Length: 246
Ligand code: ZN
Image 1 (cartoon, rainbow, N blue to C red):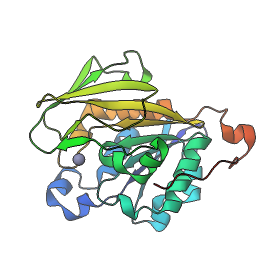
Image 2 (cartoon, rainbow, N blue to C red):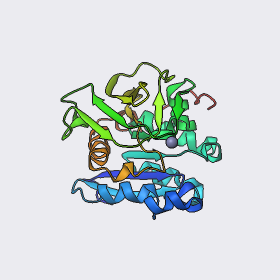
Image 3 (spheres, rainbow, N blue to C red):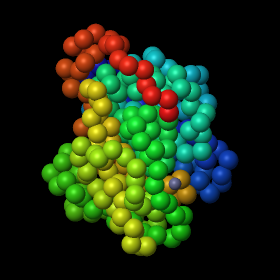
Image 4 (spheres, helix red, strand yellow):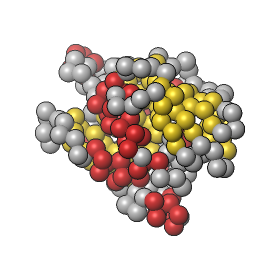
């Protein structure tokens, strides 16, 4: 492990890709590998992947302790993630680890625990197109993006999205049906930052789109902890209250 590089772990429940041929044809090695293979091109970043079927669900203390930024994709197996693993992830965020939660990860135990709300939303699987409008020009997460990203076909997510008011709203999406959605949001939690990024339904090739990959790349670089985190300041595992039940 190179301490000078940002350590990114791409975690995926990795279920759809193994049982659904349509998804497998888009992501033959899994969504995590598609995202990881893009990030591996960056000099500043060292990337590993982790999945639910691995020991300790790919979320062992050892893995998390050597992760600066965790990227999370989950959908049908949220309930299989143990509460112990959820607590370990939350603890690392409070210590300074960055967390990027993608698409249906809005209903993951980890995201709900960190938000403290239901994280519910409206959705529709149809033939909507999506435009992600940049609402925070100049933000590091939008580097290389003009004023919008257009996705020809995506699942619709609509307001109301039951989240705490974001510290920063980076993108708002509009859909063919007229719905809008806060599709790129940032919150600070403890010494860490959380970025929720909406696109990425498993039956669409969204994570092959260069601008979507660019946003994930930008976010990974921006969410990486600064040297002065709580961990360094107060020592590891500083006392905190237990995580609310997800
Ligand atoms: Zn979806």
